[in-house]
Every structure is written in C-alpha cells, then in structure tokens.
Length: 349
Image (cartoon, rainbow, N blue to C red; front, side, top):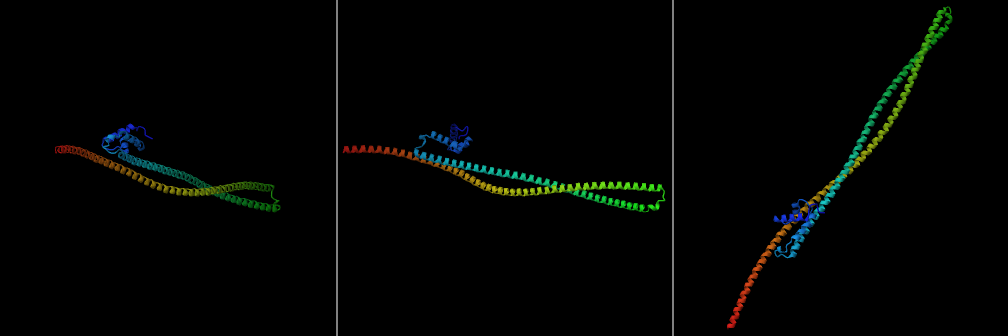
C-alpha cells in the first residue's frame, strides 16, 4: 500500500532529477531522493515512468528485444532483492517481538512469585514474633504460678503453725481444766479473767485461722486461674507451632516452585539466546541480501556501461556501414563510368 504523499508525480520528479545528475534512476536512489516511501510502492511507479519515458528514437540502433530483456532482467533482480529484504525484515521483526513478549512474561512471573515469597516471609516473621511473645508470657505465667505456689506453701505453713498453736492452746486448756480442781480456791475474778483472756485469745485464733483460710482459698483460686492460663497459653503455642510448620511447608513448596520457575526462566533465557543468535544470523542474512542487492546494483551499472559501450560500438559499426555505403556508391559510380567508357570503346572499334 502506497504511503501518503508518494505519487506518480513525485516519482517522476525524483527520477528526472536523478537522471539530470547523470545517474540511472533506481528504487534506492528514488527513495533516497524522496526521503520517504516503501520500495514496493516506488518500484511499480518507477517502472511506469520508465515505460512512459522510453524513446524508441533514443536506442541508438539497439534492438528493442535486447533493451526489453535488459530492462526485464534489471527489474526482476531489483524486485527479487526488495522482496527478500522485506521478507527478512518481517521475519526479524516477528521473532524479535516474540522474544520480547516471552521475556516480559517471564519477568512478570518472577516478580509475582518474588512478591508472594516476601509476603510469606513477612507472615513467618510475624508468627515468630507472636510465638516469642507467647513464650515470654508463658514464662511469666510460670513465674507467677511458682510465686503463687510459694505463697500457698507459706500460707499452709502458717496455717499449720496456727493449728499447732491452737492444739497447744487446747492442750494447755485441757491442762488448765485438769488442774482446774486444784485452783477452785481462786477468786471468781481470777477465773473470769482467765476465761475472758481465753475467749479473747480463742477468738483471735479463730479470726486468724479464718483469715488464713480465706488467703489459702484465694491462693488456690489464683493457682487454678494460673493453671488455666498456662493450659491456654500452651494450646495457643501448639496452634502457633502448627501454623509455623504449615508456613514452613508452604515456604518450602514456594521455594520449590521458585526453583522450577528459575529453571523455566533459565530455559527461556537459553531459548532467548538461541533466538537472539537466529536473529543475528537473520541480520547477517539481511546484510548479505543488502550486499547482494548492492552487487546487483553494481552489476546493473556494469551492464549499463556495457550497454553504453555496445551502443557506442554499434554506432561505430553504423558509421562504418555508412562509410562503406558511401564508398560502395562511389565504386558503383566509377564502375558505371568505366562501363560507359568500355561501351564507347567497343562502339568505336
């Protein structure tokens, strides 16, 4: 399809300008003169210009068949070279575009898996931090439980001491009761005082015992809560360990997938290198075709020079033919004169 602006008039002007420089208009020279247009567009228009500008009187006596054969040969070589160059360029562009697309796809896949790997690593890091926090909390719970057990043991020891004191007081009370008969002579005030003191002491002991019992109950409740919290922490730690193992398995699977993708990438890279080598070979073939095209242009120029020499030689032959024709006419005239003289001699004899 012709590009916009490249018309037969443009081709005519460019060809005539090139011809005015003393050069033969070719597709490359016309394209260089115009600065635009494809060879497939310029070639038929240039052929039309040649057919329109052919002057039968300017053949210098060359046969039209020879001129047509030379022109046909030149146009055929020119078209074949243009066609090969366009095919090589099209094939090169197609292969280059395919390689570029494959490389972009491989880079996108690697970017996606790298992002997923970073996300999994971040999740694993977060889980490890939470695990460390829970382990620390569990350790604190264990310390608190140990403190609670120590307080409970201390409370039990104090309760035991109080019980021992109570038992001693009871024994003392029994001793007092045993010896009460021996002290009946004491006054009622002394007995009442002793009774009051005993009642006060007993109440104090009961109050202290009740307080210690309450502390023991609270300590046992606190220990029970600590045990529950410890069990809950252990369960959470086990869940986190399970999740961590799952994440590690997923990480291992993703690493395997990443390894497979790296292998695919290396394979794609090798294939890309091979295609690049093929691309280089195609470029070399393209340069070779361009060289052949240049050689064909040179051969055509040589043929044009040979044609010009042939035209000059034919012109020389034509001139010699004219000279020989003139000499023949002179000889014929001399012959006619001699024949007339001979006839006159015969008639005179």
